[in-house]
Length: 612
Image (cartoon, rainbow, N blue to C red; front, side):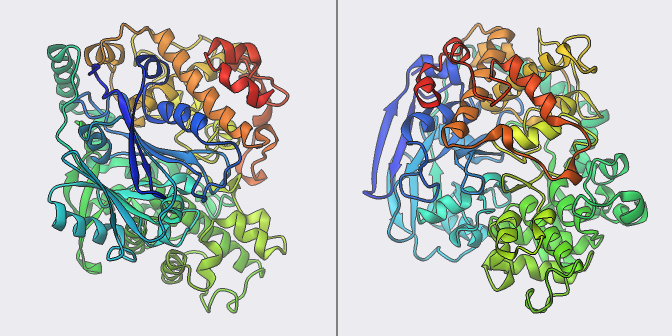
C-alpha cells in the first residue's frame, strides 16, 4: 500500500447492483492529489460529454482530500463532484464533518456512483462488507431521521444522505452528513434522488499508512499547540464560527441586502442586523462542534427552547445572510427554524434564500400576487411567510414547487420581467459576499467552473480583510509586489492564488486555513505521502486541476466567457480582469479555451481532441 492514500477507488453501479474496485497509479495521485482534483480526472475520462446530469449515465462521486483521514490539522474535508444539474457545468461541493475520513477507513480514495435503481436503495460498506440494500423504509424521512435509523441498525457509522428535497429532485438540494454538514452547492441531492440512492453508510477499519509518523505527529502538535493559545481570529472562530461575519460583513458592505438591491445603511441598519449577531446566536450554544482533525472547532450544537429544538446546529454566516440580510429579516428565531428545516431536508440555504428573495421582490413589484403564492404575503422581513415558503420549497408544494429548482428556472416560467430579480450565475444563486467589496469575486462568480460560488479562488478575498494573509502562510509562496494594482503583477497573482487554492482544496484543507497561522503544508505532504514537493510543483498541480475543471464545462458546450452577472451585483469590469487572468493561465482570452500547448504542458493532452 502507498503512503498517505489507499491506492484504489470503488465504483458502485446501481443499475445492476455491482461493485468494482479500481487501482490507480501513483502518477495520478501526484498529478491530481485527491478531492476534486482526482474527481475531475476520473469523471472527465469516464463520463461522456453532454450526459444529462439526472440520467443513469451520470456519475456522482465522493472524494476525500489527499491528507483527509490523517491527523494533519484542518484536513477533514471531502468533495462531492459531478456534472451540476443546476448549471450544466462542472459541479463540486465541499463538505466537512467525519464522512470524508470514513471513505478512507473503508479502504478507498473515492466512491463513485453510476446507474440508477428502480426503487430506493442504500449503499452500505460495513467492515469490508459491501451491499446495496432496500431503503423503502427510509424514503420520505429527513436526513436526521435517516441517520438515526441507520445508526440504530449499524451502530456508530458515517452517513451521507438526502432529505425530502433530494428525493423530490430539487435542483438546489444537497447531500447531508453529520446531521447538518451539507455538500450544498451544485444540486447534487437531485442526482442522488434521480438514482434512488437514499444514503451511503460507512464503517471502516482500515488504517492509512504514512511515510514518517513521528514527523507528522510533531508537525501537527506544533501547529495545534499554537492554535490552542488562541488570540485574534482563532478565538473569534472558536467562539462564534462564521457568524462573526453577521455584523462585520454587514458593516463593510460585503453582505448583500434586499436581494442585492439595497444597503445596510438604508434598508437593514445596525439596530436590525445586530439582532442576528454572533453574540445573540451564542446565547443558545450548548457545546462546540468540529470537523475531523480540526483544532479550531468553529461549529456549535445549539438548544433553542423557544422552538422546542433540543439539538440543532448553529446556522452559518451564509445561512444567516441569505435568510436574514438578503430578505430584510431580523427575526433570529426564524433563522434557527429555517436552518434546521433546510439541514433536515438537505436543501442549500444560499440558493433557497436567494430564491425566496427573488419571490419577495417579484411580489413587491406586482409580478406575483397572493393568488400565485398560495396566499402568502411575501413582503420583506415577513418571517412567518418566509418559513412557510421554505416548507413549500422543501416539499415542492404549490408555489414552492416553482422555486425548488432555483430562481432562474422560476423566472423563466413566470416571465413578466421577473428575470431581472433572479440573482444567479448560470442558474446558481450567488454566495453572500459582494464583488463591490472584493473586486475579483465578480470574475469568480461569473467564470469559475462552479459559477456563483464564494469558496472559489479569489485574489481579493485571499489578500483583503481580517480573515486572510497574503504572504508567509506557506513556505516559499509569495505574490508579486504590485499585486494590488491593475496590471501584470495583479493578473499573475490571480493565477498563483488559483493554483494554490485548487491544490489546498484537493488536499482536503479547510478554506479557513488561510485565516490562521503559517501552515506546514509541504512538510505535512512529505510526512504523510513521502513526496518532496516544491511550492512551484504544488501550484502547477492546482493549475492543472483548475484547467481540467474548466475544460469539463467547455466540453459540455458552456460559453463560459459569455456569462454575465446581474448588473446590480457588480460595480467593476470583471470581464477585462478575467481576460488578463486567461492570458496568464495559458488560455485564449477571447474564448477562455486552454491553448493546446498549455494542455500539453499540464499533461492534459487527452483534452485536446475534445476542445479542438
